[in-house]
Length: 305
Image (cartoon, rainbow, N blue to C red; front, side, top):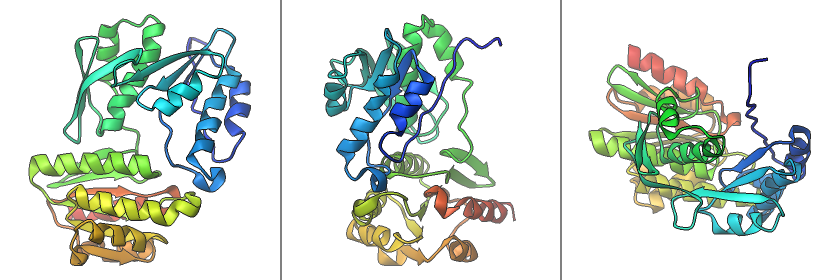
């Protein structure tokens, strides 16, 4: 009864779901953080994802505002055809709300908003953009920037969403709740920065990404290539698209001996002890179906032994 603001996440994996949910929610403000290749099994093409996500505007109240990522020109241009008030946030000139000097060490980050440095106690560049996204709405709600900066210092990662744990000498980046190409890239960047700053070995426990349709093999191959370029020293890949991940990694320059294939999570868990070292930085990430929290539990037990 004391709440003044309700924040809802609307999800979709098939056309029509966002509009239906938006018409139920009737928001005063709606936000689109990113258009990326996810749930392609249900949408076919990324252009259809753009149409689906922007359909949130159909549920906006008459004087509502749609906030969109201004770093994606195709999103901005399409949003402005929808007949509602649109505001853009991003890092590029021309955005209504601009963040600059985004920097992350892998575990924490910072950015500049309206001349003020905002420390962000969350890993990954994507969380810096999330902070900018939230500020774009809070600003219109008349929240003072100083209060916003203070509040940001109290946030912590959601479990299994790029949550960092230090266990003995080991650092675990637990991001096993879900995965798509964009979130994989963000997690690998965090792993790369943390490994580069500490000089410790980067290990990537990679599960397959779900619902990518006809592009699944190609996108998993690209993931492996990204892992190699992120400085991953040991790649442990499991699931139906593990061969494509490994092929991409070796093509990207990672030694074949540093890549290991596992048919499923159970086989991976049985063999983890053969590949993980006490001071490693380990990223564990895959789609929900991979169930990689089982691997996280094994790693925790190993680190505490």
